[in-house]
Image (cartoon, rainbow, N blue to C red; front, side, top):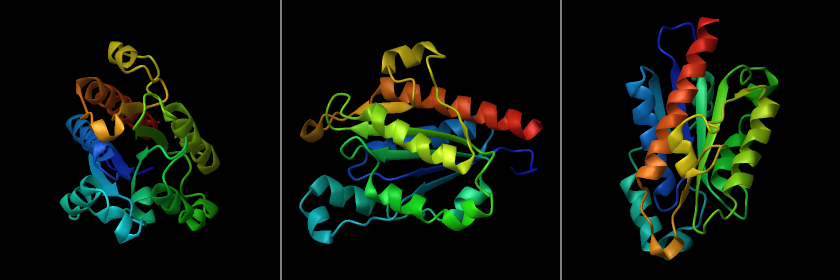
Length: 205
């Protein structure tokens, strides 16, 4: 944990067509408004260019976010709290986020990932579509890190509207492309505020 006055929050995500990126930005902005110093980082793209080019939304989003820095293990070491975002891939996290997590072995081996606050968020094409299992899969890594898992729970009326106590979860509707709406944004704000609150309390302790 840092000894600086401001809580340091890293928001690390992978997004193919932009929904998870929208949630990540909402979380980052909310954390900043709560007084945190924030790093917004995307995971490196691993998919073949032919697959990306086959989906105009994917290609467009990759181009639009080219200026967002790519996450490195240093972002984890810097942070007091980390929020991870990923679309669901058959009820689990994306390969891109998993590849980032797989880079963290040396830092984990030195005990540098412990005692930080961790939380997760996701988006699925189908209703529910593995939202809960994806978020729970993320927490498995958090436990291995020795981290403190801070889920939003049903701690605010906006979480009853979003309906997911494990983290923020959006239903994109696949090809229907349902945009990130106020229900998702409100849930993301609740989660970000809660993460900053607990990270600040740990820092004070």
